[in-house]
Image: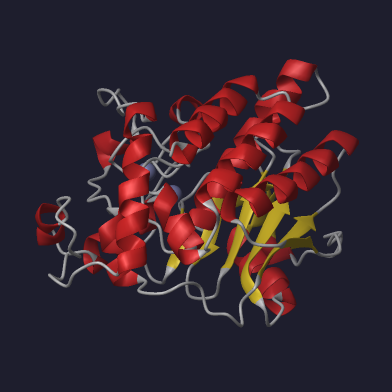
Length: 325
Ligand SMILES: [Zn+2]
Ligand SMILES: [Zn+2]
């Protein structure tokens, strides 16, 4: 995103400026110190037995985690302070699995897409289902040919349409949110901007309303070449997993190189992985009740099918580490 100059007036998240502030408010600093591996939650209570087992299992991922590396000019952490969140902190925050009446993640394609973009949205739905271990349904495409004037504008090139992300959240996605939705994810082909003072935004989500919207517009042209296709797919998957993670209450991560790291620009975003680290991944096992080994095995297979060889190798290594007797 650029020009992060707007007032922070509500619970919506422009990934990730607002999330940084939200977390700063909700997680006391002392928790970080108390979150050492002592079998206790940051509030001093012992971890539930099941969570303790998951925490122990997640330790097997430690050798596979890469350090975040030094902060580079323009990186997220150069501008924003993040407190991070351990698995134990998450268990304190979310003491049980997701509300059983909320069973499904929904994807809504927004706007006309090319053949390749449409395929990327459908692959994202497939990946999302395995990544979070919850069923994903794709709702009917919303054409977006009758956008009110105040919800659209032209970019500085004078010809590319930009849509107001808050309008998509409130007037398009919220109205379509099914009762059993864990979250509703709008995947737009138009570029987005979140309001006055902003040039554009990659995505925006509302934790309280469980709706989010992201754009494929800046992910490259997947019809250019197989390499461009993979790049667009990888970027789209990364944003979808990251933003869905936020909607499940996972803040930005500082424990390792991780799909939940805050990113400030395209280069930094491209540097970060899709997969979550040893602190963030068990949050999925705990809250969504995903099977740790099966999840990684299936992700390895999918990534292989999608031509994402580097990711496939990492998921395979994770499955092997987690499956050891
Ligand atoms: Zn974020
Ligand atoms: Zn992480």
